[in-house]
Image (cartoon, rainbow, N blue to C red; front, side, top):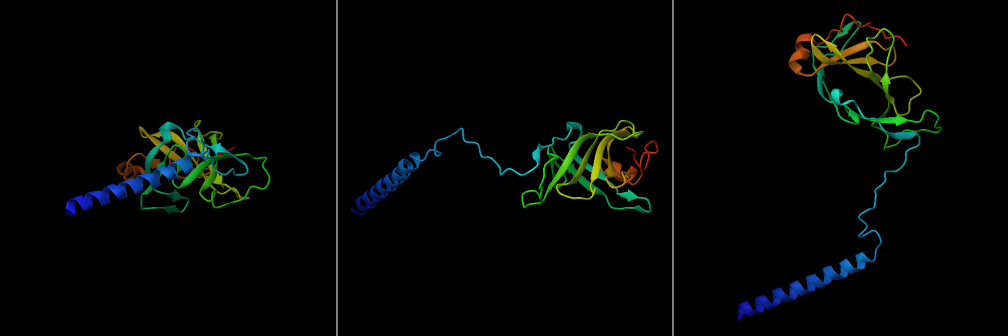
Length: 193
């Protein structure tokens, strides 16, 4: 007798749950966006944004290097990840240089305005990605470009304030330990426009 009561209670609960779910489904189906499989979710437009910049495929991956400068040489190895639209934590975006009223917002706090290809005189035709803060009146930032050095593909980093070489990134930490902290002799320390 108890089994029959339990079974009938379960059947009643299932019937109630099904009818509630069906009622919600029918109510939602009248909403025009409920079944719209072609709906595109659009991000909020940011003034001056021309879309993301894509890095060259040969540049993507994890790189290792030791920072150096005129009177400084680091002993620690830096790790840099290059993705299709990101370098480190910076998201690469193209910016309309004629746009007025560009501001930093929550959405743009990790954005950089990026340019590719950027080349310098007497720099072995290296094509750099130059990156600047999304909104900044000063020319602070960095440039990264691919180069072959000691039989390996390396990533040359230059500051954008004086365009001097401050790091050479290698594909492995082992290579960075062996060769890191020095620039290729054939490249000038300071780049020229």
